[in-house]
Amino acid sequence: MSAGENRKLLEFAAVRERLFPMLLPPKRVEQMGEGQVVARQLAEGLAVVYVEDTGPNEIRYVTWGDLQSWDLSPTGVHQVALWNLEARSKALTPTVIDPPGRHDPMLVWNVQDGYDASRLLLHRWVAEAAEQVRGDLILAVPDRHWLVATGDTDPQKRAAIRRLTDQRYHSSVFPVSPLVYIWQGEQLEVYEGE
Image: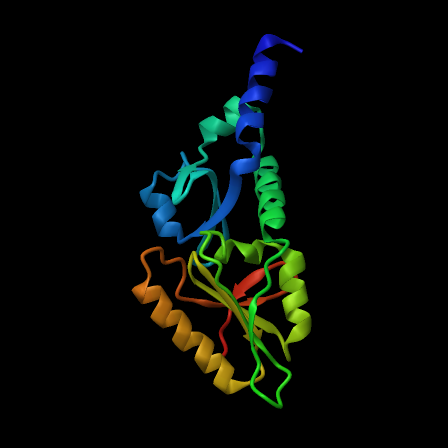
């Protein structure tokens, strides 16, 4: 192994466990310098970027220059970020809002670690949530500290998720998306239901 390759491995090893995915609106990615920050669009109005968690309430966005210096692909940083998010999320469970006599919960993740919304990237978690609700899973990520999901069969819950999403999105310091999405087996699409 050459000295340059060894240096790249050491640089990456120093940050590897601090890399996480973070959801942002695509317009925010553009403002930060699209083409510099490593990002990918997940769905309409929803993009994922990668950050180094540098300390309490401090992050550094991963750039294409970082990937080049680490000799890492976008797929590689995505996988490492998901592994780290999965490890951080293992002990977390959502708040379950399930009215008496009903077995169709609304699930809310709100841990305030900055990665709550990003947990929708953990397909196993989303698939488990989809098994708990009636109908198709709809979800929303109005800010980076909040992820909510429920089934699409109850009109009151559909209205509630839209109302809560709108309120949180417009009052958040870190808004992500005002849209409600439907989970289509490892893919998100904008939910067009009323």
